[in-house]
Image 1: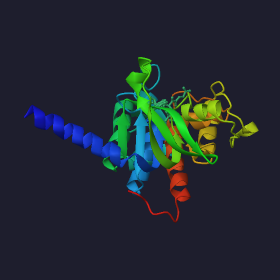
Image 2: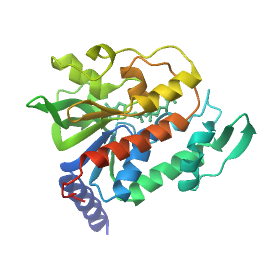
Image 3: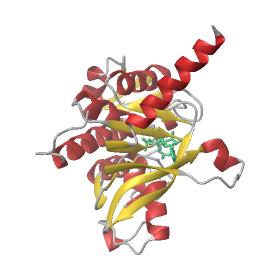
Image 4: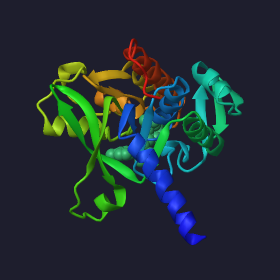
Length: 261
Ligand code: 48H
């Protein structure tokens, strides 16, 4: 039986990986904005691959604030909690709370259940850039990176990449560090995240969600950081609205194309 168990797992995983070496969209980072975007795109039959460097997707949503695992959400994002069947409680002043474990688990479940391929323990270390367009990501095992092993990576090809890596905005950073690029940001350059201002940060995160360079989109804290906007602290409505906006924009950008899913 042991042989069959091993064989089942190996063939299942490699079939999935082989099948997703080329995707419609690759999402780097499985925090709330990346997961929501993955769930929405997959539900529209877009072939979606999500790369998460940690063992469990969820990013900063598990932890709530200071390890108090409740999250705050504002009125404008409540329809997303309804859509994902996440319970919430009204707390006054247009604010609601939800259980961080329930909310995070629901996003992960829906992304996977809707058909996004989620690969964990794998991190993006570089991008493919061809003819002034990002056309894929270069990935390796996170433990290989952590142990500083000299092992070359492999590439995943897609016409659309979403940087959903949160505060470090790693995809945009690597693009800018290695290539002379001009971004669609204020000043055409990579900006730095600013200090906390919840209202301004939430607004800016959604506003700056979009294509920042041909083939490269940003969502969530990455959209906030690259545009030099304020952080917002432990409120997650902006992350969800940003993931939804990213899915809508990515989907619209594919109009007329035959989906691979
Ligand atoms: C693969 C990677 C890589 C890599 C990172 O930080 P996240 O939760 O992302 P968002 O933007 O959806 O949500 C942000 C929110 O959690 C938050 O931090 C808030 C609201 N902060 C406000 C404040 O003021 O502090 O998730 C990003 C995910 C993580 O799971 C990382 O492990 C993953 O991306 N990741 N995955 N390759 N190179 N880098």
